[in-house]
Image (cartoon, rainbow, N blue to C red):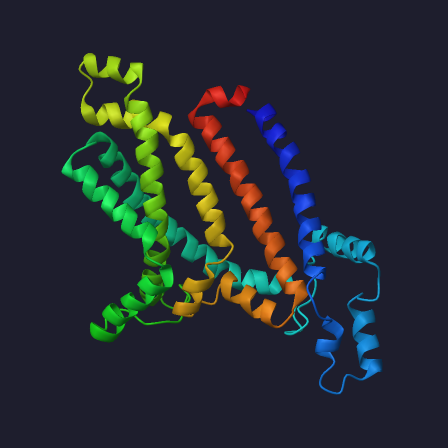
Length: 314
């Protein structure tokens, strides 16, 4: 297992380096001049020169990248030009909100998607299979922002059960926190549940048709034990991989959902930074997202290797 971990780390580190280069380079290719935009309407040349010098905008691109990368390695993601705050502070401020939303959404997706996928595979060709596939198709087809608006109209405006928008910290009130996160978590989890259901169904169908499952069934193994002990662990690899990718996407910020429900997470932070040409914030958020994706893929590989020891020799 240690050798397997070292091999995956050897791939993860160059991936992060290349990703950081792409992030920084593409950011610098955006049209317009940050110093001019920040200098105000008068655009005083002395002010522009001061801004260029302060944020190293007068340096060549490789020098700016080296300065930025060196800071990142030390935990310094730069300073937000608009907010005049360290980007790492903004990340620390927004990350718990996005992390909670992502965890709740994944919980919804797993609770709905995996059991439906197993049921659909076991009851293939029956009414249960048709209903499960219909629900999955609905989840894939309905836009998140539209479902969010409908839920606000029903549960907030008509019934008054849940708040329409905003965020309450769990340290202030856990009940109000869960009430404020219930709708955005369901909206995000609903779409992921549909994808999880389809992948779980496909993986389970492949396993249920294998020889060892037929042998276990012929020996009189109970259906529940057959599914949970023999079929599901061997069908779990694509489910684990998909879960890691979807969780990473949630951590990168669900822009539309956060905008609809006014959740102050990564998505809203990114949108505001792009509109304000706050390069340091954009770069900091994106590099954190890229690192999260790499770490989640590494965790998925390790978990898959734990579930299926054959992968350790791959």
